Amino acid sequence: MLFENGQTEFEINFTTGKAVYFFKNGAKHSEGSIKNGMVTVGNWTGYYENGNKNYEGSYNEQGQKNGTWKWYDDKGNLTTEQTYTNGTLTNTKTITK
Image (cartoon, rainbow, N blue to C red; front, side, top):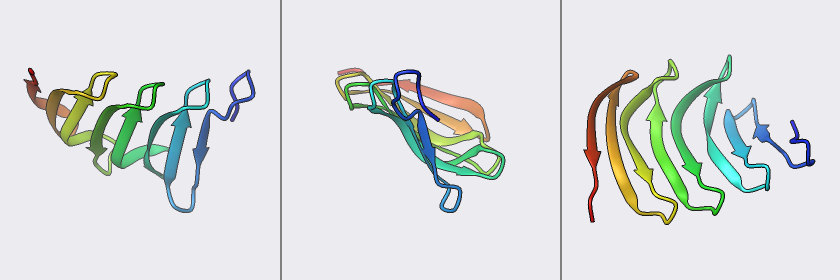
């Protein structure tokens, strides 16, 4: 799939389940795994257009957020940690400098 500017929008390897999504400028947007039915599973990492990490966390086999998710500002500083149990947010911790 391509954006209107010709850049690749995403690449999915259905054999391995590896998925990579891109911004219109070609920079990586997010990467992780999928399974049948395009369900997001396992560890995922998202990025800002500048290449710095935006978030990282895991999905369970049903595609629900599970465990600790970490969120970063566009400079790469950890700002928030959230804990999920089978898609339900159970705790949020704001990180202060």
